[in-house]
Length: 577
Image 1 (spheres, rainbow, N blue to C red):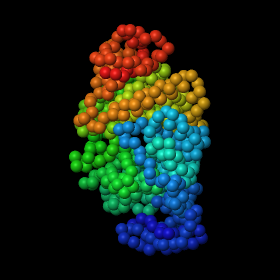
Image 2: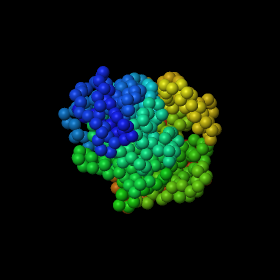
Image 3: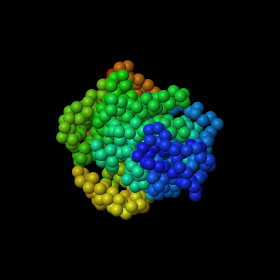
Image 4: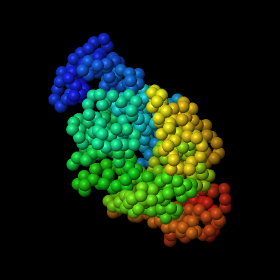
């Protein structure tokens, strides 16, 4: 097999395979290479200029962790199904995404255990799973955003073959699978890339570590490294798309931005494989250029997250005004988020102290991913509280209705569908005690702009991780079962009207949103579904559109229907028109 590594500044590179030291020959553009007889399961490292061995930057398997030896992996072990490559994911306009963290989704925290929960997800009705990052990170537990071996799945969740089996099992029951990848930084613990070459730059700074060198000298090979990584997940493991973490922290100022380069490569792979592949950006810029076609000066991505939707709903229903929630006000912003996806379209942001965003012209509804809860907005709270720990059942149902019946692509976070009572905290397992101390201290400092109560749980403590695991027994309890049924019916209603998200803002009718800030009611009409909220503390009439409407769902199902008024704190859903 061919062993190849990029080390442009090295004078010599040796392959350490078992007890052998095998010199690699220099090749063009700083690569070193040799053809060596090797078999699956053999450990190896690379030695630069005679120094101690280091893991392979492109290691496909790190069973001993980020500091251990790399291990030869034969990709044929990933060919786990005879109908490999035949699954076709639903388009984003029909998607309902479910985000999960493999380590806390089940008590066991493995691919095999998660596979046993697929019937639950199918019953719920979601169409796409989104896995939080899998690239190998330090220790035995973590969110995955401090990964350092981008090509190697984290061994704590299972083997590469077991990951491929999990993806295939999802496909077999009709679920597409997306993977969260991190291309804006790498973690500090076990990060050996800088020893090999100029993967990083000090020209820019990120909030999490050194910025990756996407536009300086030698950046062509760094870009190739990242793009090859994306293509590997999509081709070898058959993921149906990638969620790109925090693209606003990807600094690329060449004529062709990294995101455009990546988008082009993925489109070519999609054509080669004959199956749809998508790229979804996480960004807080409110910038439609992310999804605009390259011919319009955009990057050609398929969709991006809209934080404003979350912030507007959270601010209104919880009343919190700390930090970035100070930018959002009442029902007016909820209405704007439902209609446009963006609340901030260039106006002044008090939290940022400057103008923020631009109008979402040319952005189709299915190009915006919205959520009321996700790993960031829960896990980046001091106590990791979900909305179910902050709100009663009535507002939880209202928020679910607005999210799942919006014209955008909804995303749910694991356990949201039954109002899980377990928190989702930030947890790490850095092996360097000083790094662990700094991380814990940094978390406390991070929340200084918020008035959240209580000590911040230490991310390094195993109990912080254990507390974050879902309690599946809650599904049998009445309150949780009622909320699960509400979510299931909302999803079924969305699926029964597949044209709801629309093809584009040109041919899709604008959702009709009305509200009265003083009377605290809001109505939302889109594609034959009419949602009415009375959020006053007393019954009142709420204006209905013309036509005949059938009441399909109501959040207070135990109460009698009132002829001309909605009970307080209720959500009604009608179909007809």
